[in-house]
Image (cartoon, rainbow, N blue to C red; front, side, top):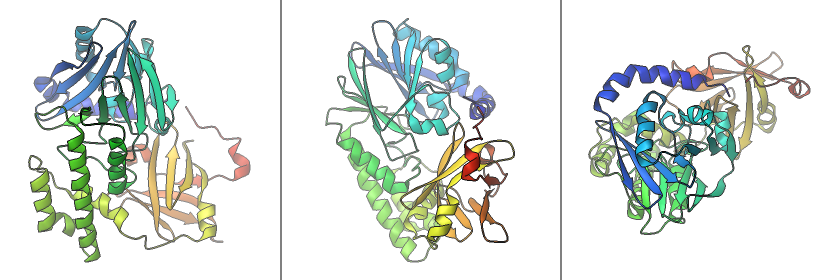
Length: 391
């Protein structure tokens, strides 16, 4: 698969690498004879990875950023000299996937949720919403989450009773909410509770505190906090406040100071994502437009796109490229649901009113790097069989 995003991430990592390398180190914790947690420590952030040691190889839960490959492999050698046989990705993030191709070239099998075929990451074996395998004395189970992103899975080592959540759960911050907003985040956490008990060790993908491991109580706490935040934001939305005013509201700032005292970031990004889902859609596409909008599109560069409908949400997806959620806000405008202010897509029509294209209008967003700025041209059904997605 093509790896344009991989190259972009590599360029970004080269910019930050001198600072990161100057402050980075690893530690690891042995939970049982064959289960280890490897933690990458930066000055203000920790990343957690799982290692299961089998008879003839290792299984990794996530694969680390590319620039740190030598240090990462050196740490694996301290745990076991055996080669990596499997990598399971929690989601598409670079710190979970950038070394996929590296380990695959050495003989490993890369396992990812099927939604990751719509991301620019290297993968091999695509799995459904639930999957299990046995390796290294562990029954390994993956559970699809509604939080963070399409393709986010939580990974449970049943025998060791360890759950790896990546960014579907973070105790120190309200993680990126993903394509279903705060409700999806909450639903994902509630689903997780049915697979764990009071003794389950929970390993988030990233933390900003000294604590690296968590338990069921922490997930219950975050569900409670998230419900409280949703109720508070809903009340302020109903008072007519926009996301910027809500983010600055005394009740919101007090909420974040109380529940996330060690984080000083502006909560506007999370507030906007929450309000996008709380606000009622001001426009409902008619049946004819909705049907005409769905289907396949193509750019002048040959990239293929598809729009499908899931409930009230329009899903835009392109293999090896991206997947995201849209919702109509006018007859000719679609809003990127988990996007920033002004990130929209315009519906282009001909003189007869027929939908002919979709034009991204992302307001100088970084998302143009992988979505692009060109219009997507609607493809007639008869031509689809003659068009192949470029690899």
